[in-house]
Image 1: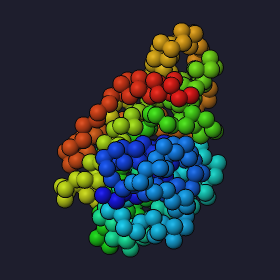
Image 2 (image 1 turned 135 degrees about the vertical axis):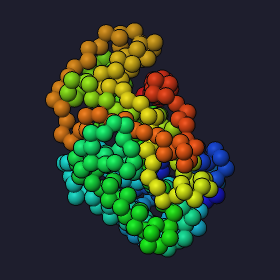
Image 3 (image 1 turned 45 degrees about the vertical axis):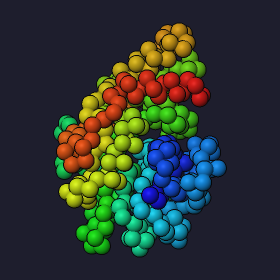
Image 4 (image 1 turned 90 degrees about the vertical axis):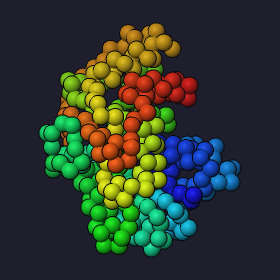
Length: 320
């Protein structure tokens, strides 16, 4: 099959490229390298089944070119990070909303079979309900959360108005190989890993009791494949939690990282964990219900949190 992966040089996108190339599909990667890295896809550039289009989803003609002849589109391109969106809401909106709309129009006009897109658990906003169930959301707590909710609204309207097949995957704190540990907006797990490897104290925002449904990259790949290939008519034009269905406190994450990294360097076990102020826009607790994905897509996570974390730590130790 011909599959377009937008943001294909990013953390999640490059893992999707690897997986679907390994399955024998023809992959087109669209990326502007604003947050993705060429070295994530360097090993694919000589592969005859891989095409790289360097371009920006904010340009409609680029989106049209990328969508030509595609069977499926896995849309991962976005500006992630709650703090980034608070610092620069205009660019987050331009990419995440304007770019998303361009992709929908290009997908519609190219008559692509199905559009699977990265939605976000941030859409649950100030909803206190746990576990998070797809049809019960609160008010968004950041510009980023607004952009990802608008994506869902646009996808729903396009499916009803133009007869498109769209599936949204609400990612819950994805982590794993190739997630960038550097930069101002690094996610907590790779950031803590590199700090601990350097014998620096990680700083937890708040008291460490905030909890997340951390989701290993292989579970995300699995959900994208299930969403792409499902022949269940009820499964289409839906939004699904993409998670494990469990939660872990940030404090416990830090302790587990120390434990797993200590097998490589005993001194890491002695590194002190520090605590700082709560970060603006942070949701206190996050845990997904995965019942809808299980019943309509047949989803069963391949990795629990600790198993995924062990694999991630091994990868970071080898590659950093």
